Length: 289
Image 1: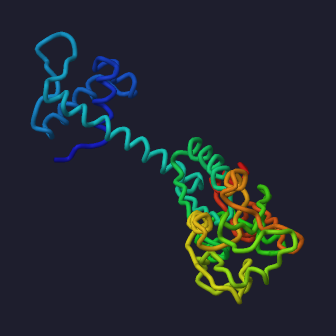
Image 2: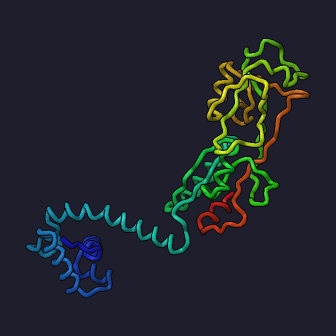
Image 3: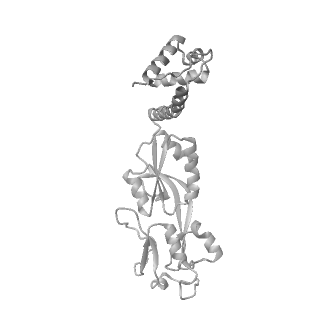
């Protein structure tokens, strides 16, 4: 069997226009050539598509069943043609975005959703990494864009500011066996379990993020698990303020901030490699931030 795309498109035009003549006009073909093409299609199929006993164009039962199947094929074909046009126009079919662990994901997803709605033929691949893992993905070429804490001194990157995130030390309500006061120091916490995030970078980080080396540690794989560990009074640790604001207000978590235990403010932005060339769609997403 050798069914052609042109035969399927001809059948679709004839059915939608209601007659062979009208279908031929839509396709800019002659009436006889359309009749010939559809008869050839019927020979390939081995059954009649049209009931030719009456004056008006009418599908047979077999014809109705076959035409119903062609609709999904034509929809897929249209999507394929659009995707090919995207590629011809340097409109890349996929963009990979790496998102860091301290990034306000809900706000970022609003931008990514808008892009997806407006550019449905470009697939977004989202990677979620901890600490230096996000930066490693970008530098290695595994990601086109990074949304994370940005190092503004890195000459390899260009960036746009999105906002800032405060990282604060917190503890569960009944975890410490001493009162919390404004003069507490990190040395006061050295005997207590500290919960820290496991970096997803393949290389050991040179920077230590709020880690007390002399303290016992509990390591977790993401910020949400870390939050639950701290709330269950299993450890203390540093958390992004936007993730625990409600728990602080309700007293489920307590801040350890004071004269010596201070919050740290991190710049959050979208960044990409300076010397790399980017396609139309990556630039379009970049410009949404």
